[in-house]
Length: 194
Image (cartoon, rainbow, N blue to C red; front, side, top):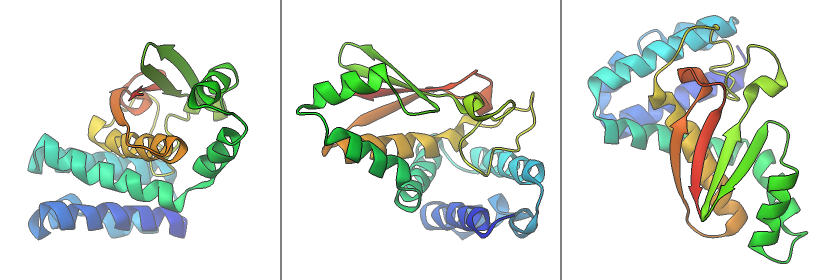
């Protein structure tokens, strides 16, 4: 496994310990050192799947959403290329509306957008990068076909999408997670309240 993925596992653990306490941390993160040292994407993804199942069992919905949203907020700070590219595209348009219309017409690879009134529907299409790819996150790219993971993990993507749009628009936005590829859908779908 790359140092980046080991860092991601460490980040998840740090947020769990910070927001849910040491006992939940030790139970959820059981086996994390082995996962962080593994060179098998499938083993890593299956460990993460198990960790999210343990987190689901040991914490309430609001707490686990807060944990994974915080991970997503951190992720965009570390992986800022998509946001930087979007900000650069945004500079080419005089208004927010003009930018959104352009994104609807020609979205970045792996994305798709639809407009529904004041909602922007953003789709992640990981399979556009290769057959079997169900998540943009390296930790879940090895999740075997037919194996689904908890929606809890996808709150990280929700946090990423939230900070992505807040960075582009320069204001707070609300994002809803509707469906995801690692929970069984063909693509991930987020509602961005403009």
